[in-house]
Image 1 (cartoon, rainbow, N blue to C red):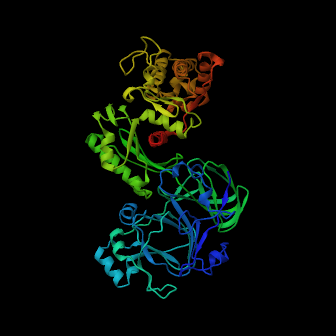
Image 2: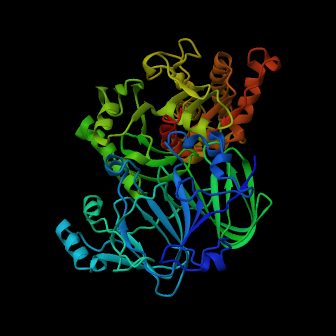
Image 3: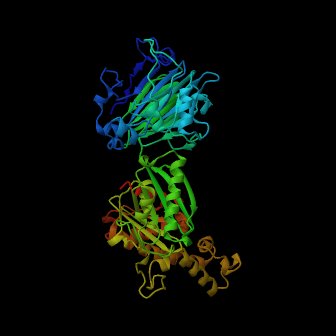
Length: 617
């Protein structure tokens, strides 16, 4: 694939200056360059490439990326803007309003301040709640700016501007603007300025009154870091990241989206191609690893998908915004309050969903839906909790209820299954599509991922891996049967067996911990090198766990067995003997495909990421 250097269309609006031409390398015959449309498929100024062709004529759907497939046209437009004079005060409508009234999409945008003269700034939102009458009167009396926030700006500042937010760029600002691909603007105040023909520019007051958010505007910059850089703004149309290159930095252009990078400071190379101040490059989706070299600052725009992940626990509900790369953009938690009943819990899930979405500026149209991991027996297709002991629920259609409260698509699954899916999509097993996961905690939970999708059984009631019998007539299990894997391989079982060993052998060094009340799942491991009884406990534990693992390996022949839970903190002390036993006992031995045993790595994030991944299947 080729990386394209972009040749923008330049605009000579009356308020523009000459910096883009003189300092930022824009080639044009125009004396004034108010805007350069760096990445544009818009009919009013399409971007070209080095051979003179329009960029859009060179791109396939594959090069734009699968995240662009749902849009009726290319989703974003990127500009550099040089404001020598004040721009008009204006507002952009939402998609809903624009589609109904203008046969067009609306416009959400963001501004990154590249340069700013001393005292330069922007107008953004109202400085208090206003009424429609106050707004209209201020326009008529040409004092609208009195009602607006004025933010004095400096290089590096960033402002996200949702549709419906009144705004204006004041003189002295040079800005990188990333916006929805629309040129629809309602101008409400223009300082009485006249165009090159001596006419005052048209105002759109009546339309603006219908679409403007009249509430006080609160500015809160996004402070989120990802592996790529500092996240500046997100929406369904664009995700923008600031990348500081100091020597060398590597970024992956995945199949989900193209990347467009604009150099706003310094110089260097992108994939071996020279980059000067003001240059923009288009990197196709699926390009793979790309190297940025030099001393430069880049603004990178791409199209990402966003999901709400909910991890429902008995005490707290954890929720977060997750992108399609597995980045947790923001997360929070609130009390579950299960004592208030199922409807109360559903209302709290809806509340947390609103909190995390509002925190990062996402609306309902910006997220793909809500994925939820729920404890208990779950009918995931129906969105129904058949039974949950932790929450004391029977037959509660939580998916339907949360969808009703939020207006978002909802998918649910058992929490252990969801954790397994999280590890396969984004964690220790991300290189595999066929995985069995065991969680070794109070009980033994499990999850099966086959061909990248959860295997859940009839009405999602399967995959209860902890309740496979490995010792007929053996230890009593909480499920009612005897000899289940859970009764031998859980942390609870390990603690039970450690206490028994200590009670039967008063000379055990394990008594150094003081009393049986101090026994934990790691006690036997701590003493296994110095105490024969502790070594026997650990050996029996590993032998029973290996028996279960080998059975799962024979039944499913996965690409990997994944272990999670507190016992896994023992690392190689646990995994190496387990792997040795599995390799010895697996059906056909070395003749069949081998099954490595891995330790889960996402920890408490597995549930949230796996919940979001339910919507990515």
